Image (cartoon, rainbow, N blue to C red; front, side, top):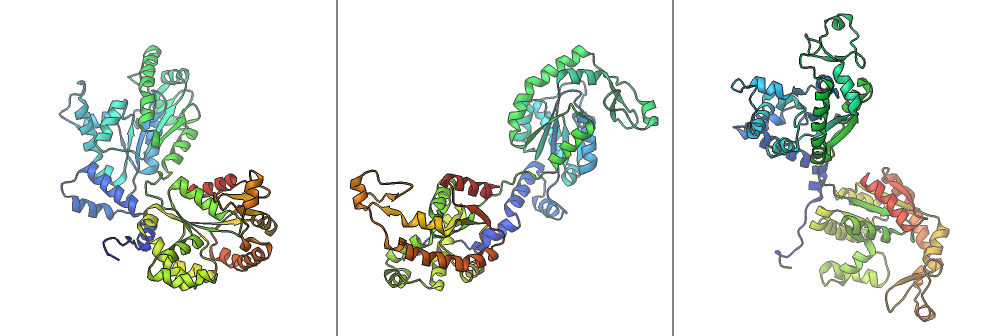
Length: 464
């Protein structure tokens, strides 16, 4: 065969290693941080980055209407996560050349935030942006600058509650902590005595206007950050609010690493392995590999391997395991299986074959056993026949022929006779227990139900 047209083979070890060490996530994180921080020496930056105890540091945005408790939650969250608390007022105070009363441009606003987040403390410990951004336009500016959070929390509460909170707000002049005369009074008497009414206390009508302005932007912000957004009800004790926020930001964000399904389907004859494999392949674009069908396809090829197995198939003898293993390791290492994933059924048939498959580094990440009794298998298999004209399969009970003409020409495969089927069932069960022990992580699915119900059960375990 011309080597330029030979199927490209990818060693299975590559995918196994990449999954084990989460290489995709590692590279993605390195590139993202490199483009956001834009260091003068990228190589040294990456070396220092990889020397950290963890490459995953908090990247949090905390949003919410006035008086929703953002400052209190942000400060407590930073205490627990060690992230750097960043507010717009802090950024403006750091910029000595900026007139605090002058409205800054969009580009300068983005530049100042980017400069703050690229400082060593934010790079090393992560950051929490409080009330940044306030509009969708600002959110898009952050995205353009490469500033993308892993978690966005939006606090919500009824306006009447927020207006009442705003009027009862008190501040500790020593620590800057915010309290409330009704909802959150300090436990320490010393702290309570020094609380002050904020100098920026707003009347109720002004708070209402600010809330209205916030609501006009909130919906657009939700759309912008929908993939990493958590909305939390702030109209509850602040301890409960904080607990929910902390639980969310501690939840690892869904990895963007490609998930390549490698599925083994086991089950007795008639359990529906071929149908379920076909449904999985159709929905998820994975490669459906049926042992018997693939061996037939190989034997039809005029190559060395095809000529080698043809006599076995023609005499209905079992192809030696060593040859079958060579055929399937070649098939599973092709580009389509490596990049799209595969569902294999009909092989391995015993523990020896399973061990050889594992030694070849073809490790399934999902193993399913379709379970049903022999009585059901006999009913399903012995009563089915094929129309030689159309190739359509029928079943005496579940899918009768549409008319006497079709019924008359149906062909019943002698291998599906009850005698032959009982031999195949006996062969399957003689190895099933050992295979189940070999794959302790396997999931067991009741195959004695509607095929689409079986598929839903498979699918829930596949993506769960």
